[in-house]
Length: 247
Image 1 (spheres, one colour):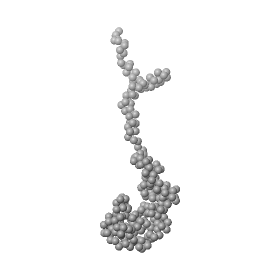
Image 2 (cartoon, one colour):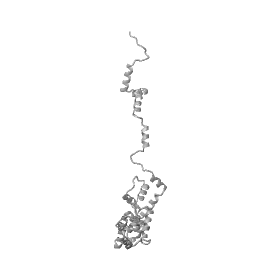
Image 3 (spheres, helix red, strand yellow):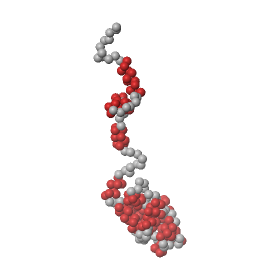
Image 4 (cartoon, one colour):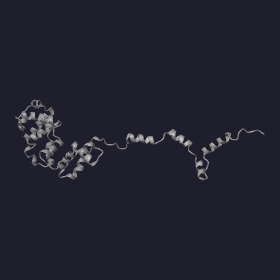
């Protein structure tokens, strides 16, 4: 029972703070893990005095009560299969699926436990498979199905993979967003396209279709713009003819 009580004390705390509180907790019983009967005999105020929250004091009392009435056979836990063992542990108040999985892996040494809720395992799978999003617990179970019956070893490798230099740099690098170009790319694309005024000026100064056709010797139709320019040229007097005399 001492290992389960320790798991409850360590929940949602940093290692140093949890270790200090757990040491004070065991100091109430002479520096050792208490029996179920001893834990039930201690008041909630005594448990609170060592740094335990009110909720954790309730969890520890519920654990001790289940051990006493036999609903949690701590002496035979190692004989149970993984599924019924997980169910028996999660029936205790304050013990969730993740805590029960850690107990199976690190206390009982079960080889086929895949902690699908663990954030480190999910992040390692995302990096290993190049996923854009963090996989859900169900996706972890689907991918980890091929690792059975040694899923615990796969989880250990996934945790250690996060310590590799490449994994550290990839975790710091933000993932690109789908469907959006980077600002620098959009800015360069805008620079490569001329403004509307420049395009209009180029269109006015560009040779007409008829001019290009004459240069190549092709018979072409006179465009509307070409007819207008020709009419203006006829109306404008030529400077080379000089003044005209009336007869």
